[in-house]
Structures are given as structure tokens and as C-alpha cells.
Image 1: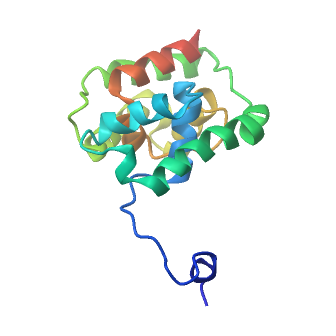
Image 2 (image 1 turned 90 degrees about the vertical axis):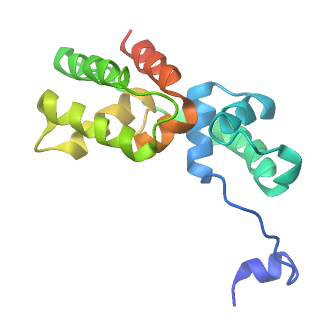
Image 3 (image 1 turned 120 degrees about the vertical axis):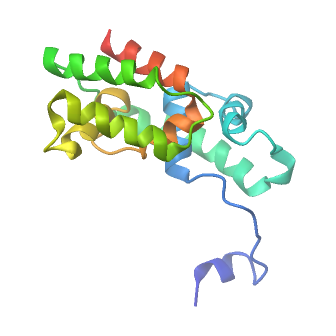
Length: 167
């Protein structure tokens, strides 16, 4: 009864899931990736032992993510310009990220992001904290789980990204 069965004529391909399509879209946007090689570079930063030829389904999704972002999402983005209080909170987040490294687990990074929010006026409204990050960085009210995103995108790259959005 699953359409996947019919799409693949009963021979459903099997491939390990590397990341979700929405995460790929976020990587396209934040990395300004306009080709598969650049996007694969970021993917390999997180999973260095993979090769494109071993993940043909995911490789196809990489190409679709670039096309979908450029054709559909790019024109709909509305980036928030943070006020002074919000800027200070985001600067504190960048400072908190200085305690991180690319070898940390996504959960540990996420915990530090929560702490930065709590310490900068969002203790009782953590949803607003993440909404602020998403609106400033991704141009949307919702986004990826930040610890997971940062582990893929890179700690230094994320600090640079947030800093560039504050300018």
C-alpha cells in the first residue's frame, strides 16, 4: 500500500540515511553552495568516510536540494534584522561557540546553545531564542536542530555565519 513500492516497481533501493532533505536545504543556503561538489564538501566534513558513488540516492538529493533552494525557497526568505538586545544575545552565542570544536557531539553543542539562550534573557522562552536564531541566520521561523546543524556545517563556519548576519 506504500507508493514507494509502486514508484520503484517493488525493488525499493536501500541506502543509509546521511541527513534529512531539510538539513540539505539549510546547508545549501548557509554555504551558498551552487554545485554538488561544494555541498558534498560540507557533508564529508561530518562523515569523512563516505564517497558520492556509494550513496547514489543521497547524491541525487544533493542536486535536488540545490535546484529546489534556487527555484523555490530563495525568493521567500525574510531575514530578521535583530535589535540591539537581540544582537547582544547572538554575540554571546558566538562567544559560547568558542567553547565548541568540530569533534563535539551535536547534543553537547545543543546544550551550550540552550545555556547561551538562558543566560541572555530567554530562560523562560527558549522557543523564542531558537526562533531568533532561525530568523536571523536562515530567514525563517523554523530551522534545523542547531547542534546537529553546527556539527555538519562546522563551528568556525557557524560563528562566521552568525557574525556576518549581525553586520
